[in-house]
Image 1: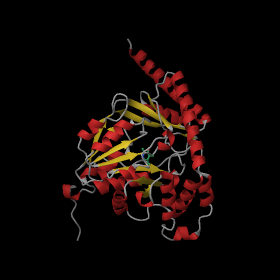
Image 2: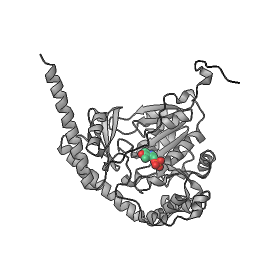
Image 3: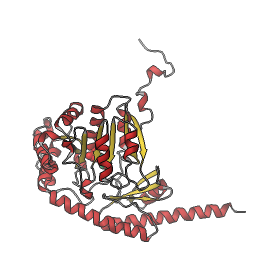
Length: 371
Ligand SMILES: *Cc1c(COP(=O)(O)O)cnc(C)c1O
């Protein structure tokens, strides 16, 4: 029997209504000389991970992963300073956050966060049937604890250092939210290796606090897709229920475990370089009349007009930067990941020439309009 052609009715629509405004994350990238767009470790990959990857055996490809799960969790637990049952891993920290949203909130409940933040947060809210509730930062770009708490949200998400601003939430403000929140608090510490001072170790002492971390940024292993979270054992168990099995790939799991055990010093050296270069780069930006937002991470947000156009012009010059349009309280801006200094010189040149070219075109356009 064939169904007759009829206009798409409400009952026939393909996706859930809550997905209507969600667009897939654009992961496809074209190669670029100087790719400063994704906050990964531009100083390289950890030596132990490279060594272990070269040793991947047939079993790791033909069989399900999981042989090294305990090894990875042990390595991460030791690094984070928590017990083995206080750590949960996932396919990137994205997976841990997404699973936590599903584990702790019913559809229709709210997820509050300071805006602007990690672009996946409103998406994780929507795809899990939650309502994203953006809350403004304070004028000094700190989180506003009272405003976050006033949402009554089931989940409050705090990113510190925050992507894309690079700013830290003050310890008092974070403590206030943890003390007073009625639901779950997620602190995303994807960039904590660059800032020091962190909640990853103390998370299990709070019944409703999850702290997420990743091997994608300072640790230089974004390609492996491994992230983790720390929290009390019962909290971590709830996340494991909804995350599902086998989220990490076997060679990555084994290589990452070795890197976390052997290459912490290597990671710290890279992070230190990124921080030094960030401060030098910000000085160069200011010397050229830019006003970068002071950052505690391995990237810098630079407010600039026509960010999309600036990014396109820079891209044509072989430099990939991340543009943002109309960020709350900031406006258009470009995010630049720190890498070896020669790359930063190219980024600076690209920013200056894009800005000047756009300004020139604009001046010409207005002159042309005059009678
Ligand atoms: C990059 C990033 C992540 C995601 O990292 P993965 O572990 O690669 O999924 C999470 N949070 C923030 C704020 C990030 O910038």
